[in-house]
Image (tube, rainbow, N blue to C red):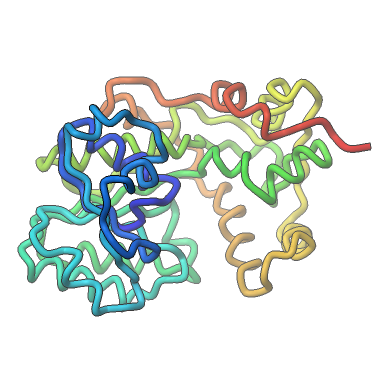
Length: 297
């Protein structure tokens, strides 16, 4: 599990341990393995009895430190590839080569819907690297995360201004997905070696930006409106939040990605692979209402 302590990765780890599957959670912040580290990796979400169903090992891994690649994949059947945007395709290719040489039987990659429209990101090149590795693979192309509404800058604008800001038209529809559902799909895939190919991981409903803003407002107990800033205005707003200049155009492209047709296509993949419905925007908003306190006056 690369990214084993990340937003999606830690939930995948929890699920796999419950299934009795041994996991190596890799992170550059890890220096040694310890039984006490289980709570940190699993975010204290599962009990000691549940953890004992599967074995957890923590391992130091750094994409840019290629000396750490070989040891982290030795003895594994599968590798879960979750690479941040700052990682180079060449570093991922090195890990993949080491994994295949070590006898890894399958690669599962977390990607994003519409990567072919965001050439400034490495994801498409990483997908091609995984597909060319010579072993079976699964690529999970996740749609817009609902968690974007609970993290800056969107959460800041919602709570501070009563605005869900974006750079697509108000009638743009998106089948947003809870990152926990993405993790559940990833765990289901890792538990079933028969699955291969590319899966679009979208929510089960496609709502307009206006409908999403209204849903967030109902949960927050006050009006929230959608504001289309356009791409230039969005770049200005992001810069005003202190986003580093090189990152601003990347974020703008990701916000604009919501307007691609595939983002508006609901999917039954969560229910099909996990046996339960995907979380709806209304449900997510109710569960996270405390992220949007009253507008400051």
